[in-house]
Amino acid sequence: MSLSARRKWWTVLLGLCALAAVTISAFAIGNNNFARSVAQQDVDSLYGSWVGDSICQVKESACHDEKALYVITKSDTPGKVSVAGYRIVDGKSVEMGTIDFSYNPKTGVLSFEYKSGVWQFTVKGEKMEGTLTTPDKVVFRRVTLHKQP
Image (cartoon, rainbow, N blue to C red):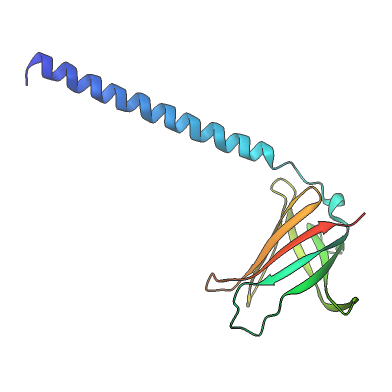
């Protein structure tokens, strides 16, 4: 290989390395900004009533779209919060049950895993969005809630 060809090869290689470094830096900065944008959500700010919609994603199932009310309180289990779920029928709340969710204040994520699937919610300020996903990774239900004053 001639000296001229080797210089061109090194120039291309250095250019690719520089491009890779810029790409990796941009990705890291973007992820860092994303992490900062998900503000730490203090567990005490979760407590209270959350109202919104619970929408079925598997239309051929017995699932029905619902207006939902979730009441979050302190759990007796450390590191968890208690979530009482209600559906609103004819203006009245009908209890569906209470579950102790794990909560990660750094990510704002509430989660509960059981044999029928995984409930997972992301809380950002006064808004909570989440899903119920089946064990075979099908999103069965999407829930969007807003905290009540």
